[in-house]
Image (cartoon, rainbow, N blue to C red; front, side, top):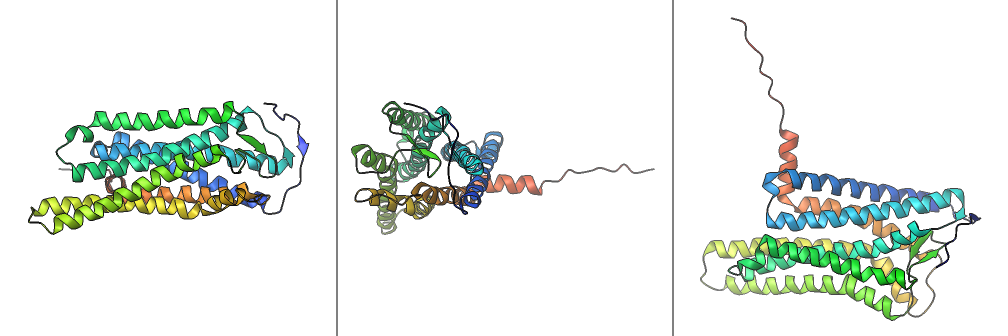
Length: 305
């Protein structure tokens, strides 16, 4: 692949710079939050549980995704400010990382849903709830996402789009586009919805039986956690709708000139929104942070006798 190392001048629209800055702020905000939450989970002993391990995996995925989006928005802002068209191997690597990190992010939510489902419907199968098995699944999703993304670079699928100042795969009707949609979005998200539906049915069924109260309450609690994951996925789907529209539009016609710019504005806003919602839904993390905020040093003043 030939790299464009010539600083060729280009025209920009008035809304480019403000939107680049908005993207930069959202990405920076999400990345910093993810890093802070990760450190809290690592150093707070009350967060050292299997469910929090899976949440930490989601925060790590968000940190990776946010960092990549941060570099991409900074790259676009730099080129827009100088009104140039320029890219290098770093731009291509950012494109590779964007696909890889999205896969890790979406499958991290799926792992949380699977764990909640297994621990409720099959509580006696302890191996599948163990630290070793969950780490195996986490490593497997990371390895699959890394391997999946490598052919995108080797086959020159990731290209520089001068109008959008970004390195991404072109949107068109092709096998690789359909595979991306299926692997990155349809498979993990539809599985999460399916698990939620099965959990709803399970809780409804056991509520009709004469079971101990703690069994039903535990199932309802886990159902609530999966419902929260569904809400997170719904936010991603809603704010990712422009990107989805442009993908399906590319099957029949040419997408708008600045389709990636428009789509990634919504993607970056969704990243910041998901971080806030994920924090709100993670009770042990909220409790730890509130405890840190409320803790004040006790000063002992010696008395004179």
